[in-house]
Length: 140
Image (cartoon, rainbow, N blue to C red):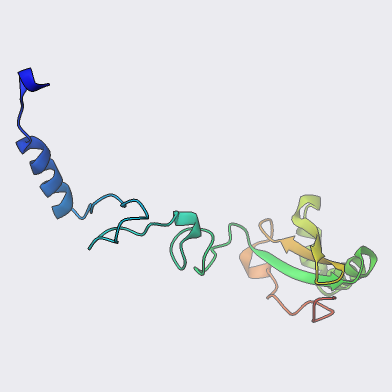
C-alpha cells in the first residue's frame, strides 16, 4: 500500500456531492454521540410515525376490511355475521368464502372471536360503512 500511494480527492468529491444531494452520513454505532444530520438509528419497521410498520404511524390497509361481529365464542360471533348478512343481502352475495375472516383474539382472561369482512370483491358504491360490531365491547 505504501508503494502505490493514491489520492483521496475523488472520494472527498463523492462525499461532498452525496451530502449536497441530501444523502447524509451513515448512522454511527450506538455508543457514539449522535452526529448532526445523522439519520435515525432505528430500523424503519420500528420507527414511530414513519413509513415503517411498527410505531405510531397511521396504518394503510391493503384491503377494505370491516369488522362486523364479536362474540364470547365462535357461535356467538357467527350469529352476529348472520344478522349482518340479513341487513346487507346484496353485499353478502358478492362475498367469497375467503373474504370472511374469523379471528380468535386473546383478552386478559379469556379468548373471544371477531369476524371481519374483506370487501375487495364488492364495488365501492355498495360497500356498507363500518359500524360498531355487536356486542360493542370486547369480551374479557
